Length: 150
Figure (tube, helix red, strand yellow):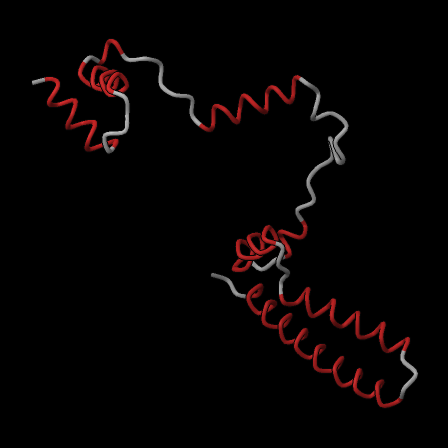
């Protein structure tokens, strides 16, 4: 009778691949709680142990910015409805639209300073105007959300 239960448990949970002794130990742990072993170490416990070990080895000493407060001004300046999205994008290596547009504007200005061809300057000025307009519209949109009270 017990072997039938073990076979069913083995076939259902492990596809018949697990060794019979391992299945037996799991069955006994379920049916006899007093014989249970220590619970497996959780991921959080392992992380805490690694952090304590690194701290004891001195790996956290002489880090840049150690003992200085965090600068959260950029976080506070970001519109509330965009903070999470911007954080995820930044972690993934993407830039907010206004940052990308600002960089594009700076690149165009550099090209303008180095350009000597009048036709090329005219084209760059037109491109700068378009990018600048997009940038200001983006900033205006974001500032509209800062003023709203929810």
